[in-house]
Image (cartoon, rainbow over all chains, first blue to last red; front, side, top):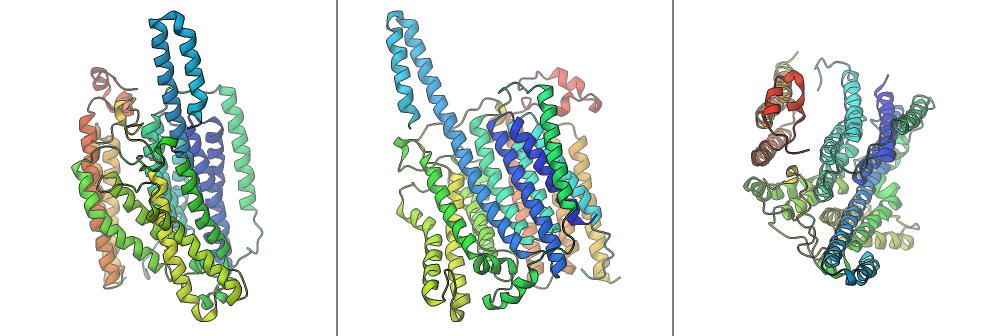
Length: 132
Length: 332
Length: 120
């Protein structure tokens, strides 16, 4: 087996492993890692094809797929950064909702007749907060 | 290295491929998110070695800088804020896991069959690139492809980076618009980190500029150099020796935009001067290419650093994260 | 085989041996601080030996200077990150959940029983 075949099969395996993690990942961050594994596997398969082309053409590796993979790596990084920021923002919004719900629950404990209006106001706050 | 009795390199290829696969499998199945992120950083470095074995040193440099370095930092900050995730959803049923495992195995086997059955006279663009490379006066064929033969892809990609920063900033709270990003503010730095923050950035600046400059004739280029420069900026922000700029700072916005804008202007002027969008007039090819690449390196460095720094935040909101377990204390 | 090639082979092999020793230490040492010690000492020694071994193959002067600069930066980073890791380990002593301490074959099972497992 030449190194092209070894790393091509390695890339195929990485796509499979990443697919498993993307479907069954325990947390959103884990699924994000799995998506990156799928991307890495795709790039490796592409790289194996580039190596075959390069060896056939007399160089070390075909430069056109290399350029495309470099572009792909940078875009994958940008997408991961956006996904991470989205996850952190979601966690922050959920944390604010939880603390506002806890605050409204404590006012419920103090004065039961006001409970309905307090929970209504907490419910009314939530759509505005989701728009933050 | 002439004369060295080196063994067949496949003795290194099979263990390297198995190690990458094993590490990927481990980081998919391990319990704690932080362990998975650290494993992913190590995996990025292993894949960098794989790229060297595949003869693509430019890609190996990019993978090591972006996948191993900047992405590792980004994910560690994420796991610090999101918690370790150990007690989230209950593990899926065994039957579900078996079915999904079979699906993934089928996908892998199908792809492996495709890879092993590739057409035998392998299609190659090496000669085509080598024929026309002399016009660009660049010694590195990948650089020639990126800046001259497939310049549209590179232009679109610089624009994508700028757009990504805008999207990232839009995740900040409305009240936080105009403030600084705070994701890299993890607390007062330890003395060792402070030492690194003082000694490394000057070295990294030279290395980054050198990587960009030498990319004309050797492996390297704007992406690799820009990634190293962005990592140095992130280090300075981590150690609190400097602060990320506020998002309405005009100089920062200029830095993000100057690369794609200059590229676009030169490309449009190519319609007039050289009969094609992104055509370069023959007399000025090398100077124009260098100008575009310099502006591109600056924009890439600024955009990558800002992508790691995160959206603007109010001071005190989630800035110290949720130390759910004691392991999440990283300021030691 | 020329003297330069023999020199390279000897020193790179010694460096590989040092890396192997650090790997063995990573597996066999009982707690996090001693494993960190194995990693930082043996890995730095291994890298130094590999760099010395590669010096005859590098071009003079810039190849040699770049290799030495690479080694210096690596030593700086290794030292600083070792300090940071040691600080974290020391601050969280006894609270880091360590899979090794629950494995029966290391002989540290009694240590695991003695340490209250406070983290998940």
